[in-house]
Image 1 (tube, rainbow, N blue to C red):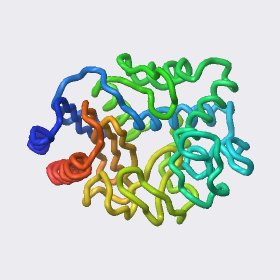
Image 2: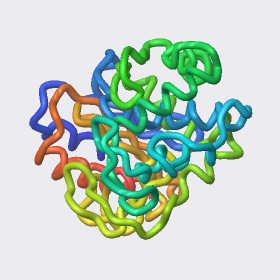
Image 3: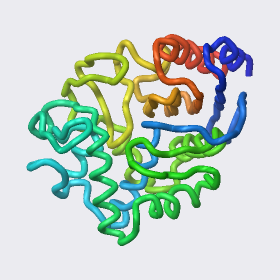
Length: 267
């Protein structure tokens, strides 16, 4: 895939990128060694919570987090809880406040309900079924996964053609609490700032880390470690990326360009 030649121009020491469709990986570049996923971890945590919900261990609409908030609010960054602690900054459903703390609360809730540490639950219910043998969650459910590109691509394949919690994936990738504003980290205030249940949804956001030709239905996440995973269900394409370089202006420039090149080549 010629589009991946663009990765050579990135100002990073290490980069690994894979493009896949519903049948599997189309092309990849870079090493397959464990790297930090940072906030891309939230995609795995969201999937684990959805599995717990589908099995009846938790309910998306049960109380969780600040007063008046639910599991659904926490997944959608709409609970009002602050970014890093239990400070309440808004009423539930009124602002999109990107919150690592909210995902820690989700991990604690699932752990209590299933009777095992959240990393063990994630390993048993997500990593093992998807063959993600090189990936580990060692700490916060918000940002503490490390793993190789092949495993991140496996997650992308699952999100393109879901087998785990398939009944809830469609709901999770639709906008939850539509119309509310918020700050998209690295890209400023967005009104609306659309999210599903753990999955950021592109819609009409501008600026954005995906390409201008990604469909509005595109969903995924990026991380401060220079990582991302997006899934464009309309195009039937996913793109996974890991680097060893902190997110910055380089990523805001090069990631959308790569996304457009990929989509143009597979169209």
